[in-house]
Length: 325
Image (cartoon, rainbow, N blue to C red; front, side, top):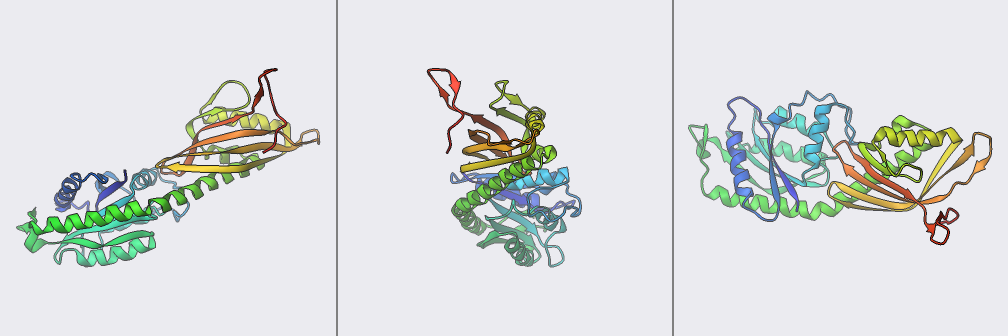
């Protein structure tokens, strides 16, 4: 089931947006076609934009990484926004600017409030959504302070607003669901890019580059003892041992298949380490069956489990190392 984030786009003292966001959330949670989570920007105190362009999905600041994980966990959004001085609240624009790929290929709808119902804020947000590859749906909920708030402070929407909200939610859920196959394609491309980074790290004997490809708690079933290598340090120690045998390392991966489901993905294929040994002899290596399990952490896809194995001859109990894919 898809997840829709209801983003409260104001952190201002005395805000009325929390009343609006709760109204949206309470109505949305009656539905059975999606899950809804309330995201309050007060819980994500981001600095003024200090990140380099976030097109890679890799972020430097811990606060940005936490925010990226929150955005990445959603398949679509309802943005609850006021209008400040004919424009978007700075805190909401800042939050949208901090990350990029996490917004891509999802849907967004708008619930706005203000002097003219927040309509001018939504006009600008639609332009921002286009740049972030967010599909903004046409129906919206517009809440003028003069008619939908008692004394401009206590939210008391008319009953007709429920029909408008239901229509908005219908469109956000439908578009978020329809775009899901495209998001899986984006994920597969990111995973294949991560595997390319592993290949480059091996060829360059770059342990720090490899470290970025693994989760801290990775569990590896490698061809060498022991039965498992637990944690990034253990995995890198194993690769460091391989590097001691080679003057020049190469790694080849064939027939890679990737399957993505939510924040988890599995890849399998055939891998081979080869190269020039320290004594100058060329070593072709052996083909192994390679399996990778990835998890999306918000910082990108990292390996949480991998396995390399060879078939064995049941008569002799020895591994068969001369097979080719």
